[in-house]
Length: 388
Ligand code: SOE
Image (cartoon, rainbow, N blue to C red; front, side, top):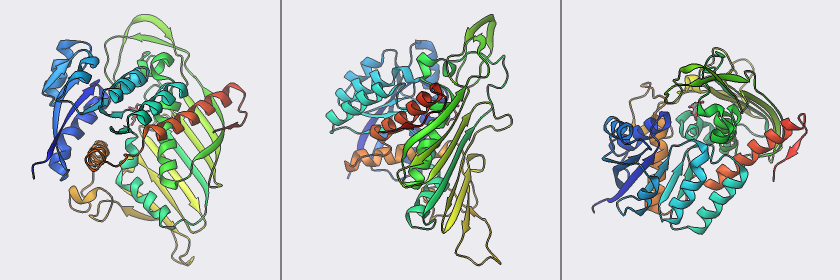
């Protein structure tokens, strides 16, 4: 039987747009998915820059007004890769127009926006919604989840999570949109802390029910940027602007499974480039993971005798590991871009099979509530905030 064709349109084409384009391009080559993917159009405000992106990233056409995408019958899926300030408007309109929506993280800039997005998703059950927390689809992370749900860790006592980067340590790094609250919602907290929250909640199956946090903006003013894309930027001159988001956030929390959790999200961890990691300590064993060594998962089996017990390194590249059958022979490692392919594979399968993809907008809203609680706690000198 001929496969159904799914037309995709992507809005935004910088760093995340590049990663998503690669995923859409590759998914049907790598996996036997139940649909034919057509990369119909990429959308951006400037026609010549958008055309250049379309040619480079493999999109058939362009639009300069995202609303036009919603009227086209050859487009089934809207992929939102824009800054957070436009997520709610685009996603709600797209769902109401009968399009499936995958949206970059964090889901929105505020809890109120995220609630409206969930309401639109609930009102349009004929189409699917997903938030792009890509680290869930790292095979080692998916394996960690499986091991925990198989009971290998027993009762979980501690969840330690971090997302450490250093790309703005230089005070002369310019004021890009990720450093502006009205565009990004928050700083390290929402941009990378959100990943650590989603990943550890996914892996442990436990949700944060309250937090106490502190945030800090170390560099309060930065030069205004010239033209930039993604995380590469240079200053336009001597004019300075105010940084309106956090540079770093730390918080502790309690989970609904009775664990104590600690989180750090910072862009000032000098020398740490993209260290999204966790350690989870349980009664029967422990796990540790760092994205900088993303093919490895470390496991301590506490049921083994003391003589030989020790952390063992699992190289997560076997055909039996999550997502790995379609890639390379064992030991032939994968990289940053692969989980994006896994993400769109799962999204497409859910669309065709009429099942609900995860993480959903509702999951994104729950993470948004954690971010909001951390900000409120920090504004109140670390007072504990309950999350409902
Ligand atoms: C910048 O901090 C960034 O690109 C995030 O926005 C992404 O979500 C993360 O995966 C990599 O770092």
